[in-house]
Length: 177
Length: 186
Image (cartoon, rainbow over all chains, first blue to last red; front, side, top):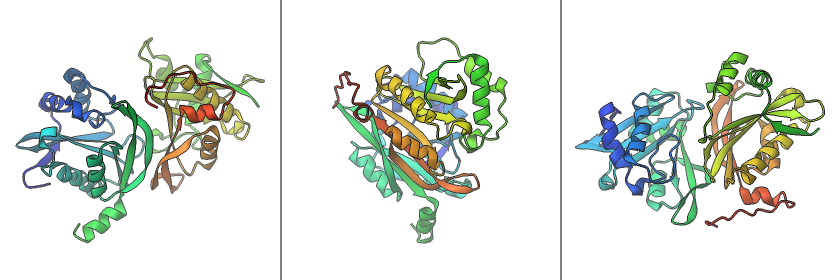
């Protein structure tokens, strides 16, 4: 993590501030919540989803904290702990300050250092050039496209999927990133 | 051999589901192990569901038309209304190669496209299951996302694979059916 941000587990008192952050319309399709719907949701609705993250089943969640809550990292390994799924979402008003990169690298390090994961999967919507660029920058391979993951501005969009393999992560670490 | 997809009595679907779950060749991997599923466990899973208009899943017995034997199950889940669902099928090894999986899988796809009006149907599998992957391709599914050697089953690694089929792709291989659903996004 960068010097001014860190990951910590989600506590009950984090639910409301996180829900307020995730209710931002610009985060539709990127909230990273299990079985999320690709549309606007109320703070109350998002809160109910977030409450499950306090004690997640087959997954984990962390608050990205700097001078307050700046983001959320969610992960799930429902089918197989060898391929956990991870999502990083940063408060729109705190983006482009390095928090997303720091949080993503921290969660990737966590999975490869502390779990048997062989690859970590993540994705970005096809319309979001910034998110795609960010996903590419993490060093994973593009593993495919899920068609019609949602609708935005009157058009279908796809989900572009990535996986960072353990061997790639190890090589990057050996090279000092 | 032709088949149909139907709701069947509690005892039949639960026995069939537990048999499929306890066969390492027909169930999935990792999270669904060990193969110690009882009929009672399946009964609680499927029969204790409450009535609801917010259904986002369904499970059916695949029944052989001539003999009324239960050959497997076909199911869907994770429905996003009028958009997508995850599709799954499991067929008893006795019926592999009989055409039952294709008939039943296609019948369920027809339900999902013609009744639920979905735009895309997805499935999740792994590449060691070559017979199933070939069957999915024959039904019209296309490879979507593949993560090489990322899972472990049967003593070796395989690729994690997801596949999908768009509604117009399904109609294209069923030219006797016409898609009359308005799609505002194409």
